[in-house]
Amino acid sequence: MTYIRPGILVLWISTLACGAFAQGAVLEFTTDSENIDHVVVKANSGSYDSVAGIALVKGNVVIESGNFVITTVLATVYEGTDGSGSAERLVLEGNVRITSDDLEATSREGEVFLNENLLLLKGNVRLETRSAVLTGELLTYNTDSGIATLGHSDGSSGGN
Image (cartoon, rainbow, N blue to C red; front, top):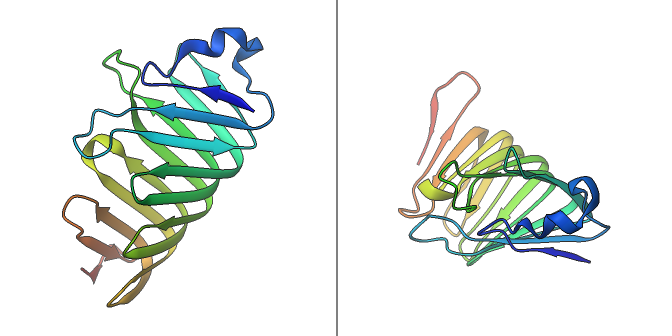
C-alpha cells in the first residue's frame, strides 16, 4: 500500500519511479475550503504528475471526507494553482455513487469543486433523500446549503 499525503500533495512521490503508484494507493490531502479540511482517496492504482499537479487514481476508487463517501471507477485530483499543494477539484468517471447521512446520489460521471463545496453529477442521475427521489441528467448540489438542483439534457430544471 502506498501512502501519499498531499496538502503539499506530498511530493513524497519522488521516491516513486515516474510518479506511478504501487498497487493499492492512498492519497490524503487538505483543501482551502472552510468546510472540507481533509480528504482521503483510496484506489487500486494511480499516477501523479508533480509538474501539472494532477493525480490519477483508478480501480475501486473510494473518496472520504467528513460524512461524504464517493465511489467511482476513475478519479482525477487537481491541485490548486496557488502553490499550496491543496486539492481544488476532483473529476469522477464511471459508476459514481455519493452517500452521506441524508442522501444517496448516483450518476455516470461527476465533478467535486472542493473550494466551492459543490458537487456536479452528470448522466443518468438519481438523487434520493429522506423525503424525495429525483432523476435527471444533471445534478448540482451545494454541500453548504444542502440545496440540490436537478436538470435535464435539454437544460430545463427538474426541481430543488
